[in-house]
Image: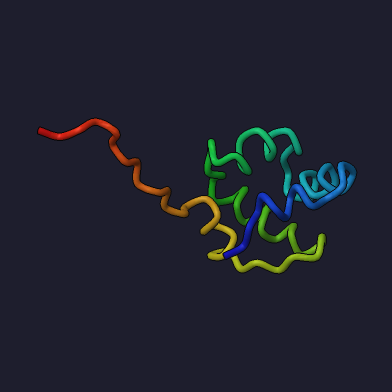
Length: 83
């Protein structure tokens, strides 16, 4: 699976700004919403983000890129005792 968070945080500040510009968004939006899993980009933005990766040394397919946003979370275990 492609780790978008590791990819983005591995870029320099200048590269992050350039990557975001190529994808048509801002580095702040990516940092605050996308790599933290708060939002899933709309299909057009997701395509642009995946395509922009190529210019910065990564070559994820669109399904690999999208999988970053749809990884199932671990089940939450209840700490209360059941009767």
